[in-house]
Image (cartoon, rainbow, N blue to C red):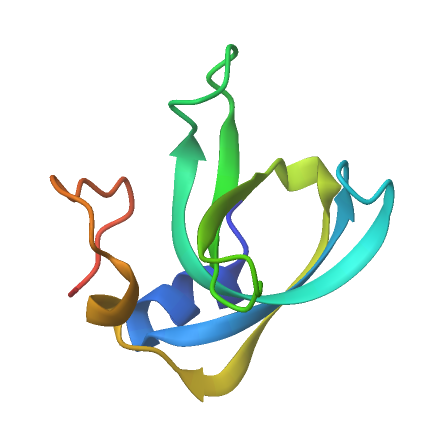
Length: 101
């Protein structure tokens, strides 16, 4: 089941605070992301469903991060809104989850 705060955050264009087991950091971390989508990743060898987020706070630049559901400990919607036009620069834009942006 997809986290309801994740779905609501996409609908309301709100950032989420995500606590998850990070392979890169080899630790549980909590970070703020733009929620993007949920479904298989095109970049993975095994097409398993995962959460897709956009990291817009890294000083090195923006990038997408994908997290398996079993590695997610918590997702909570914040009060901060985002404008998708600021981040979504690629085409074509194809979403798995429906949205109004």
